[in-house]
Length: 420
Image (cartoon, rainbow, N blue to C red; front, side):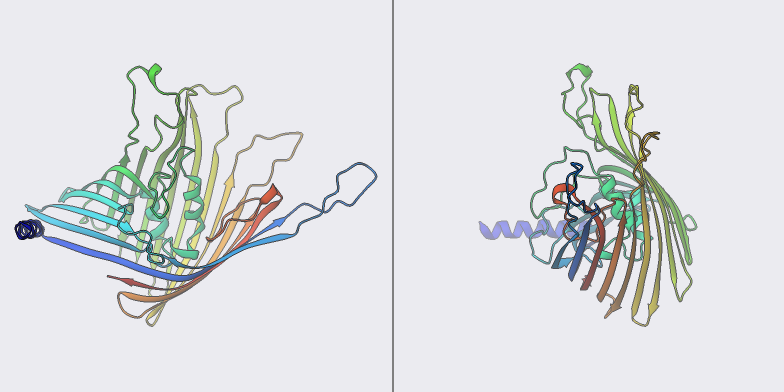
């Protein structure tokens, strides 16, 4: 009986394999020794004992939080994936792509989810229709036009700030330890998407449009809608990207709108809209990168409050980067800047706080031992101002008691990457 079952299983596998034009197992294993150091400072002045009843205060100086660890994905994201294509004839093909994040530093997460990508598609002369979980349109510009590819301590601030800015409000499920949570943001990837990609034969022009379903239950009489936050529209995503790549030039513009929260009975919908423009040009001795990004966290009101409601919050980011080939190696460098505008109403009796902002500089080197294996090193530093609290990674800024303001964040990665 057991032999018969084994034989049937073998025939089934052989049948599946023969039905595919190609099936590929692929992956990346990336490990690094990484360190992070984040400094917060008490900005308040010492107040000495006095005769006027003013409370005394002793400035507490600065507190550094730091950590050193064996990390993963500091150069390329560690992953394990399966992809395949079946030739249907007449230029038509069906494909699948299942890609799982892995944590090779501790082995805790393996093929437990296909949170990086899980799609099935149909392609031909008309382009490609793709269904499932995938990168969003605006994230493509963040990663393609970043010399560090949004990995490790060198990740540009445009991505770091925007991803935090666009997180879902309040009701995302608690993450399972060791398992990538796919329900906290639509910034990097979105689930439940229908996407269309232009065909690759358009003289260098490329593009995509995407729609992600919120998958919330709707009631034909709104009276029966449960009075629970974020149960009506949260999770919906709409985005698109259009670009041109020919020879040394690559330029693309993208836009995405993610519904991050809603209150049905209050009549509000909270959205984060992001638009960005990225470009790169390869001169040969050097390759230049640039990106401009603008995100708006806004609340749409069915009935606008008398006082106008909460102002929109804007996030503007810039990136300038360069890569320089040196023999078997590659030097990477970037400077990025972000600024938050809270659009606070003017107050004749007080001065509004200055807008939070931050700068980051990153420098790295990659040495290719082969086409699949590389050694790398990266160092980076963030300078926060006016209450911005961005880090290169690691522990959070110390702020027990609310007396400390985030200042500098510094980090390094030294690692090896192997792709297969």
